[in-house]
Length: 110
Image 1 (cartoon, one colour):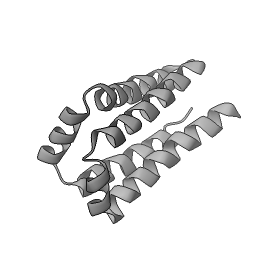
Image 2 (image 1 turned 60 degrees about the vertical axis):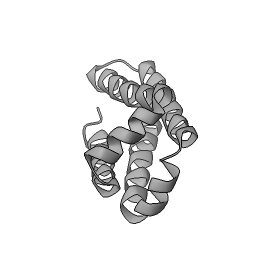
Image 3 (image 1 turned 120 degrees about the horizontal axis):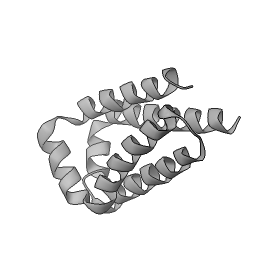
């Protein structure tokens, strides 16, 4: 039961974040251009990555590694994260990536 709640929460947060990027790109850009908000997002990702260690298996180990990598980058290097994402692609592309990740987290669940 706890696994289902965890997976649903991670997938849900990714989908909500993706939707926010898609439907409110200006507001997202305003918020996510400030280091404290990026660090907060990173801390949340690191927290969820550590929670993935509660369960065995490839799925949770992969989730741990992906969330930890994304979280640490945002937590430790927020300005680099901001600049990189602004240069690589617009917010709506990041929204599509987040939405796709949310769907994958849900459909690949054990």
